[in-house]
Image 1: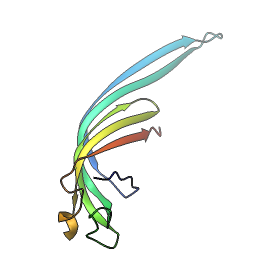
Image 2 (image 1 turned 180 degrees about the vertical axis):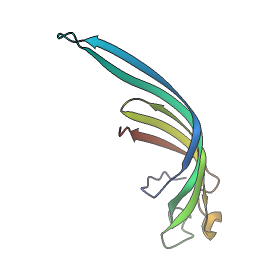
Image 3 (image 1 turned 120 degrees about the vertical axis):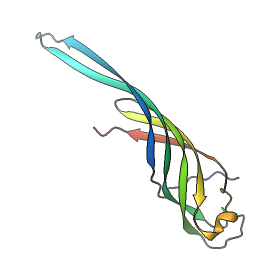
Image 4 (image 1 turned 45 degrees about the vertical axis):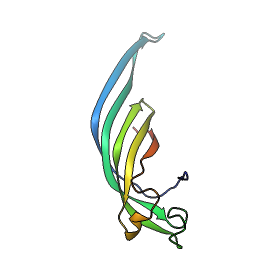
Length: 123
């Protein structure tokens, strides 16, 4: 099965369990004022389900389908993340289900995927 990297639309509902650690540190500056800093670390695990699109064409149907089109999919799986103040990193494993009539010839039918996730904290 060929590797494929795409920028297709994907969205999902993620439900899981999360654990956070908070570290509060205080330092006194030369003027005698106390400066506090809070940092956090965390991790979570959960499951996801949602819609997306995937390219269907000669490359993904072993040349059975001539024209390319974006097919609607349902994606489902599980993921785990580690988080810090600035970013989060995760790994997911799941399956895609093509909702068009070409699902029987699509090379990704019943094949698991592995995804790598990077998130940036905006707060």
